[in-house]
Length: 384
Ligand code: OSB
Ligand code: MG
Figure 1 (cartoon, rainbow, N blue to C red):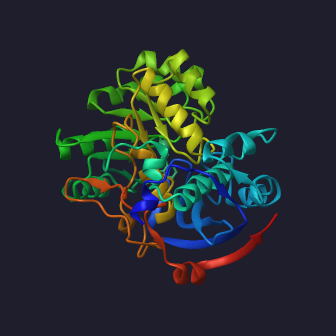
Figure 2: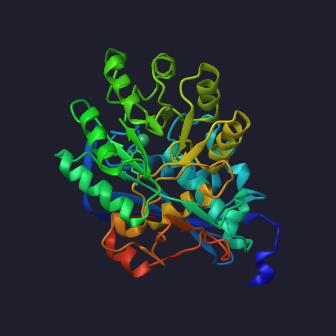
Figure 3: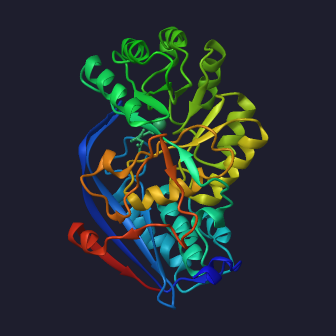
């Protein structure tokens, strides 16, 4: 095994892909400004090569188009009909080649593309005996973790959650906000927590420029950042808002590609980027955005999509790159699920750090196939 880990080849061949949907109940419903989720419908891929090696990946699209336009059902069709056929039966020298293969003349469908593209990174790591983090160029073996707290019906409940999160060791507290549950909620958390830990807010596009003076009130709370206050595709108005606020704006939904990240930097639409590999069509674009931001002196951090332990493995590997300098939304398995589908489950130490599995080949966790089979509601085998 240790011999394999030192191998530097990155080639792989994709024989077949098993596409399935599982349903996994969240321990409690998660509410953002655009909707609420109580259960995750998750598309999982298992990519197989001829030697019998395989790697799992996860499509992060939600059931409903409340975050971006993608949905699990649309992604299912995109993967089966257009994306998987481009890689099945093919040999590739490097997973870095996959992004272009999937992107050519297929618009959008980033989360579907990412599921295939990242699975190829996972397969390359597995076949070639490298950890996903090392294959990607990650440098750290522990990454700091923040928690994203959904919108609560009352301020007191939010404060209670925030205090518990700080006690658990989290390095950053992110508060979901929406009109009428914003300034007073943030103030309550800041008063309860003092300056023990960084606080931020995420609006998931709930505001318009008509709210500019209202949003500027958030400047009073010394937030690390305000995430995606305006439209998901709106870089120009975010620049106007950023000029009016001292709080740094972080873009999430708006950054769908390397070009959008360049545009954000050029237009000064914000000062921080939340990178979710699913949103940008996979690791190749995620790493390119990381590199561009690093060059521009702009911090990035790794967002989350309420992933299972499979998606989390990819996020943790990504977050081990050097410019992921702010804590990611990388909560441990137990924050989301009664039981995760991987072992070991993802955990966080008392210092709020997640350990990057850099000593194992592949994604670093083992999938509990019995559990996944029991949760599967549909399955298709894709062949060349
Ligand atoms: O905007 O980052 C977001 C969850 C669902 C939809 C959008 C977002 C989120 C989160 C959760 O903030 C992050 C996590 O996985 O813990
Ligand atoms: Mg967000």
